[in-house]
Image (cartoon, rainbow, N blue to C red; front, side, top):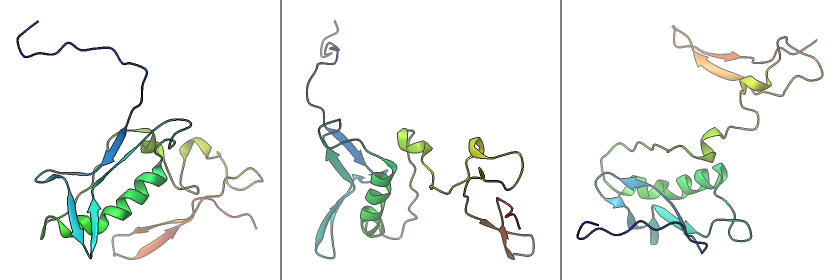
Length: 137
C-alpha cells in the first residue's frame, strides 16, 4: 500500500448520521446570523427505521423554505440557483400532478384521475388555462 493511503474498509453495522444541505460554490456550507436567528444551510439526522425516519420530498421542501432567508443573505447581490441531486425525492410530484402512467386513453369516466388544470403563455403573452381532463357533462 502506498505511503499516506488508508485501507478501504467494508461497511460495519453501526450508527450512521445523514447530512442534507445546500453548498455554495464560494462559501461551502453556510452559517449566518439572519434577523437574530442562526441559520445553517445543512442539517444532520439519524436516518432509518426506529430512528428519525427517512428524508422525504416534504423534508426537502421544508429545508429549502427554512434556508431561503440565508440564501438571500449570503452572498449579497448574487443570483441563487438551486440544484437537487438524484435521490428518492427526485420522483416526487404534487398529489394532483400530471403522471403519464396514470392517464387514460379517453376523457371522463369513473376511473379518471383527479388532475389540476395547468396554465401556459401563448405567443401573444396571454395566460391560458389547459384542462388536463375534460369534464363530462
